[in-house]
Length: 397
Image (tube, rainbow, N blue to C red):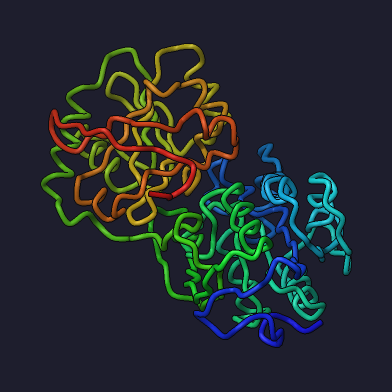
């Protein structure tokens, strides 16, 4: 069977998927097993063999295969007609088996796998007739797909990397599964081109975000399930950001650890305190002094122990992610240790308005925890000014 572009059941770019109930969705499953490996250990990325090896040395464990399992289990819970193609071992086969989905294995990767394996597998899935490729990875994986297949076959990303600035990812693994269920069930889902962003990891580790347009991939377009492209740059309302920061600084309590999350808004808080800051890392402040810089999840847990502790976080403009995008140092264990009452969210009203009514999104890597975090949260929007804003696991209205 031909790929997407040559199948008469489908139509050209921007038209809906036109699959009927009687047809079988031919799904390609692809996992970059080392995507996001450096996130929890404060490496701010996983590109390159040296970074991968250092992450493993620091005790990081692969997350992408498990996140694909969550997507496939969501899909498998529905009586849909599927033919699944995948690549061997950790690049898809293992995830399919754990999710209880039978898959045809087209080939085997080297161990450890590398970007060339990803590109080879993507081309093979496309050549074998996959009508859509669901992949687990980050922006590096998306770039590999641009290089390998371009817009030849639609894709859907399961977020599993550190840097997910591109617009090809579902909100979380379950959202990817729900969208696949709609496709396989014959729902009308439009198709559009989505931007893939290229982030300079070395600059990122130095606190500088250098992002550029790398290419485009075709994705099933359903805003409730897909994240938006990250909005960069400084806040327009600098004065409001300063007021937010001043209120946080003035409200800090003694003998309490403050875990200062990444981002420019939190950086202004550190500026108000007169403290050095890691823009894209997590620093710890105790009694108005920095006691830890650019720490990973395990280091943060070890440092705070059982003492009083709070997290100070901002949200990603345009996307609205609270956990799971660029701050994987806040692991599920750390979030549970802190508790909802000890997590302070900072955002100007202007920043929240860019979400156009969509909720803040949590994608911690633990689906049960994500559900527990849903609901109305207080968001600090100015000096002694807070509003209630909804937190959810997807970007639905």
